Amino acid sequence: MSNLKILVGCKRVIDFAVKPRVNSAKKAVETANVKHSLNPFDEIAVEEALRLREKLGNNIVKEIIALTCGPPKAQEQLRTALAMGADKAVHVEVGKDDSEANILQPLSVAKLFRAIIEKEQPNLVILGKQAIDDDASQTGQMLAGLLNWPQATFASKVDINDDKLTVTREVDGGLETISCKLPAIVTTDLRLNEPRFATLPNIMKAKKKPLVKYTPDQLNVDITPRLEIISVTEPPVRKGGTKVESVEELISKLKQAGL
Amino acid sequence: MSNQLKYQVRDLYKKLLYLGREYPLGYENFFRPRLKAAFVKNRDLKDHDEIKKAIDRGEYVVKELEALYYLRKYRSLKRSYYNQLP
Image 1 (cartoon, chains in turn yellow, red):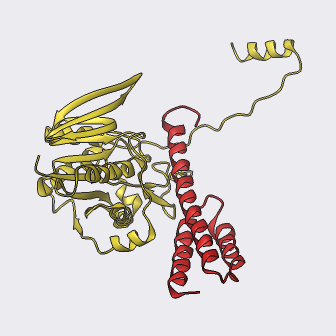
Image 2 (tube, one colour):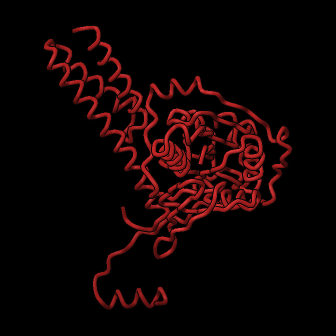
Image 3 (cartoon, chains in turn green, purple):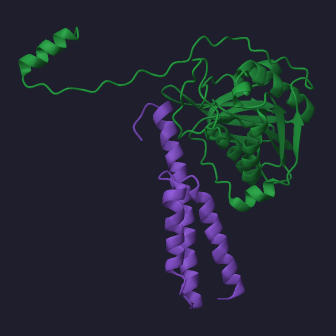
């Protein structure tokens, strides 16, 4: 195999440590003035691309491109990916802020990715298996469908030999090893690797790396949502337990609860 | 203190300040004052080797913090998606 060009997806999501609040319209979660970060599963994807380069060498892995579809602020997340070690970033700008970028749904994202893939011609795409905000876990699969490429989802180990890709997948009740030909789509599971930390000097250096911007119109992609969100509600609050004095009381309480 | 060491100390301080921004117990009211106090405590160090030792300790703390953040993220993901206790 002469060369490998890797594209990684980077989604801007509400930070994992923040407790999300439903907005007043009950249609979405509050995104204004909330800390955002790079989706942890996408961090794993970036790390895997970097590890492949470290393993195979610079003359095989030619370029690692980070791609995001999101508001102007999603640049921060691209910079994180660049600081970790990606070479180039591509930003498809959608909306002015996080609430406007919310109209993006997996199918539109997959179409945007396809348009960028046609431009950049990567032969391996690594995505997070899901984003921690909408938990859809659909983009990778839809993209594979649109491109008619093989997909290896929920990867916990990735190996490349010539143009053969061997991936160990996490499935219910164990592991499954599959192999396929490149070009291919890989989506990452939590145990694939331990992402490195973007250090301060690297973040400074990342500011000099190239970043290309597109809009959905330039790419001829229609991003109107196909699904309508009817309502968003917070999970029910957990009720506290009570202590019972005697067995009789316990039995009567259990009967009351219909057990 | 030699210029090179001065640079290293400042670099370490900046690195720690940057890492501190994500500290779970808070930055302005917890991490920053404590970090400053820790550096001020060693302001009178004159000996080259002792300063080196202090810098090494600082670098160790940097590694610990990175590990702490990583584990915190990993555990919270594991808790929310894999239905197991960390």
